[in-house]
Image (tube, rainbow, N blue to C red):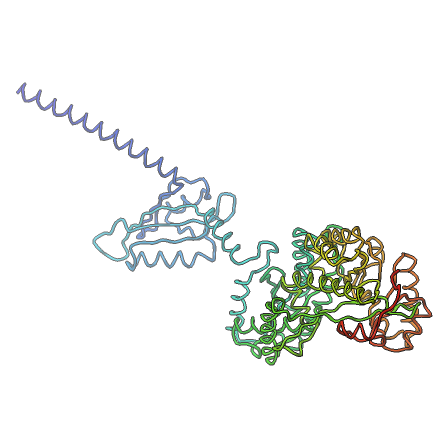
Length: 587
């Protein structure tokens, strides 16, 4: 008996030791589980679907009452977002009725600070009594995924919005148009392009250009939303926007577009600099111009192209007949790519009459494209295409070179013109090194810098266009004469003109047209000529077509005249015959 009792006691002690080891292992496992749960941020939950009673491990980011209600068998619906509650209840019913053994659901619950917290609930059937439906116990985890959802929402927003303006981007705009097509109610779409934006970017800087884009977007967006309920403005490319205007007919869309053009053209102040921004707008309407977003986009693109051809700062509504014209223009653009290499460009020359002496003392060189494929090409269209591409730089320098060589050749033949003028675009001026290239051309032709006159349109007078102004100063410092062309067409101020180194001002033809029929035109030109001459500028009148116009210009003191009355643009040989050799016309 004593041996048996000793053996039993020994067995008992061993059992105690084993249980102590197991308890320590269980405690360690529990500690590791709790540590893992803490590290993961997950919360463990369980619900007996027979009674609705459940439990939830303590959590700091939910309201305290959630666990209490679960323990009392009350559904936590009052703390679930109303929009998510139907999905939550539907999942619960499926689990109770044995239609599902697992659940994975994302929904919002009220946080401790009364905010909505996104959670992900993952659960699985943990117990089933006798296999009877409706007697199921579910356990799982609950995770706070607010940060993940915020990141997903941010990525989605970035995928659907323009980062600069915050407007919907092209992807979202297409989705909105597709939804409008499904609704099958009339609406209008427009493509808006900021005229000459590349020049603003190149001359005033990209930061300035970005401010222009954001400010003009805010102005247009406010305007269209005030005029058309439900209107949407999107930025679909660098300087292009698109609108979706519900319920508008073509006539109403044209009226709205005209309002947008007027609204955009109000002076815009950016970083203390005031500029005028104009828009070209292409309009298309559903269902007349397209039955889906692809066709509507193409239609408004064609219409925009037409608005630019018509002179910019205006609108055009899609016309199916324009498609052929657009294709033709594309072919013309392709042909122009090879025109310089094929020696298809040429120059014609229009004499300038010195009013005091009655002699033609200088000429303006004008570009022409002589193409067998495009024999009747429009000069303005050719210039637009060149300025809209990189070709303007090479072709522009070619014009300067050919004009300089021709002036030198005329002088060798005895035609002593004082200077020859060439037109230079703002894009050429915006490129560094232009003045140096001109200097080399002048030297190679054996001319003095003052023998060349560079004519520039008013667009270069945009305030603070540093790149263009630097090139103007460099040309002036070389001794090249500078002329402001088509004065009166743009928005330049006399103060801005005074600050730049111009030698000549050319009055735009539209003022000369009425000088012999309209007293106001005559007074304007007279005052302008006096003011410019007091500033030290020579004044040339453009577009003189009648003797009465020339007589008045003589009376009010213009320095020179140019136009069909004196001569149409002619080739170099005709110029030599018609103008003839004159002596000592140099100033």
